[in-house]
Image (tube, rainbow, N blue to C red; front, side, top):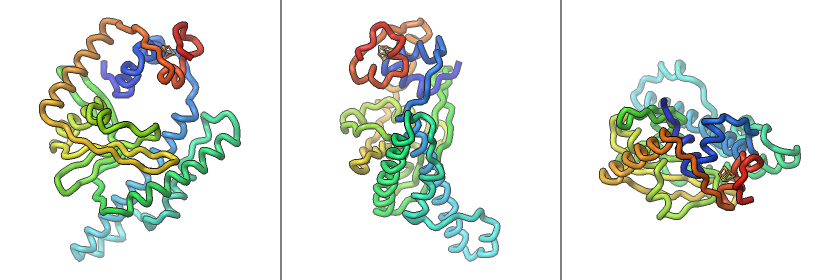
Length: 261
Ligand code: SF4
């Protein structure tokens, strides 16, 4: 059975959370944090698509094939106002307890979009794809996931993943399994090695990019880790790993008898 990286993430946070969500399939409400993250991803997906249309137009123009410009999809100017419009049209109201909470999230998102625009303006971006699903085979097991954004950099492909959670340390990002899976998927699906990976943390305090790379040895270790996790899931090892941080964000804490909050 194919597993998504979201499932692995859930299992890594707490095996019982995985059991509740994917084995017992307990229903859960979308949280405000999940809703906000989806809104941010939707807005930046549309922005990335506009970037790709704009760069295609420029490419056609530089080839002096202006006649074809009329056939390309229309795209607005890549301005901060456009990005803010995309944010407001992408905002998902579901998940918030009150109208005030939703309005606060809208304002927070506006600030994040401004930070993103400042980051984006600092350098040229050649977008290869945005919000693209992938399917990766590791020793006969299929893992499904989704790239947020891939750019063509000076040294090759750069995978960027957007996070609305707290900034993680360089050490944590260097060892992150999700990024290793992305690097493996890049090689397998795009048939090109990944030169660089980065988490782009989008918070009210500002934008923080934490970049990293993967060696062939690290990718081999990541495959072993995935196979090991798959084995534990197949054996039904759902031993809970409660902790204040993980339980506070767990949608099943109301039914879990070992919840730490
Ligand atoms: S409440 Fe805590 S221990 Fe229970 S399933 Fe959720 S994360 Fe695991």
